[in-house]
Length: 163
Image 1 (tube, rainbow, N blue to C red):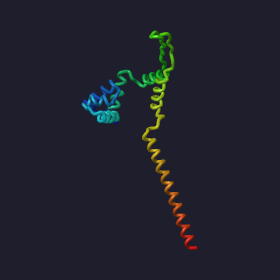
Image 2 (cartoon, one colour; image 1 turned 135 degrees about the vertical axis):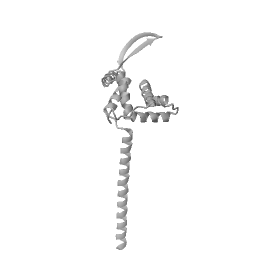
Image 3 (cartoon, helix red, strand yellow; image 1 turned 180 degrees about the vertical axis):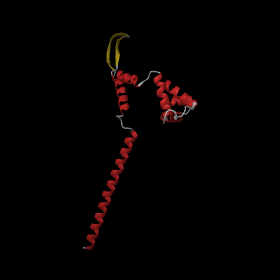
């Protein structure tokens, strides 16, 4: 859809974008902008809003105005992948030593985000579908084998009866 044909944002959608940029939480943004109190309803509204192209574009535009560009995010992601933390060692409430250490938790979280952005993870629904398809195929093969065995047994019984 071209820019000229893109739907204009409603007042509630503009409020949603403003709150979403502020909080980073689609449920809270929907609660405040759509005057909803139920979490499930707000989550659904927020999710639907974020699938709409005009809202996605407005969110990106708002983020860029705040300096949150692709380059900025890549830089912050890289910083997170190299995160360190300072550990303090105290004795009777007095700091005796401090050391810079690798922050494994932060690095792991940023690594997970990096892999998600690259599309390295399989969606859970995709896994469930594969498992269901495999299970269905196995059951079909097992039933076919049983039917074939039953047919052989019946044929053998008829042959034995004719002798």
